[in-house]
Length: 243
Ligand code: G
Ligand code: MN
Image (cartoon, rainbow, N blue to C red; front, side, top):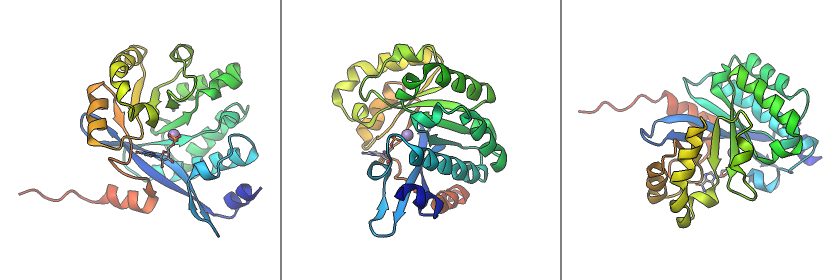
């Protein structure tokens, strides 16, 4: 209830965290992340307020989608990734809502990516697959978020039009991952999907994930999430002339 009112009352901010191309370290896009500017508790991150299900989660996702499309439309040539709740994804009107948000903002579908948990594909498999297929046909990317947490099944993804897999922070920071991530990335590439390593916090992790073949890196090592004004300023800053 309080979250629904916060969305309506303008207390939700959308912050952005860069996603860099592993080889060039060029900024390829941003993940949109909700922040609740709570009147008494200060700035809250989603783990403190996003329920897994329910109308409030859907209202929040719809708000972030709308705002992220508007802001990304003003940025040059970068993608924007938005987190979607599993239930929202299975709504019959979901694909139309996404198409309308892009159209209102004037954002090309190729610049939008939707991040979903694997559970989105389990809950209503037929609806989820139909929605993903329509989005893919429009040009919107689908990324599986937090892969490796819980019961990840690469085989499940064989049947779905997924464009990217995001390896969870817990995998990226586990030294034991070095033994298998290279093989995982090769298989994933063979299936036509890209791989992002998320939650990269050190140079050693960045190097290991690049070595393993990951396409994109995201995490505090590169940049923390920041308000859109800071992103816009950074994108407009012209590089210093080198002697
Ligand atoms: O589930 P999802 O991947 O959407 O969550 C992203 C969350 O992870 C955000 O709240 C973001 O602030 C946080 N995050 C981003 N980079 C890092 C990082 O390098 N380390 C940790 N621990 N968390 C991160
Ligand atoms: Mn995410």
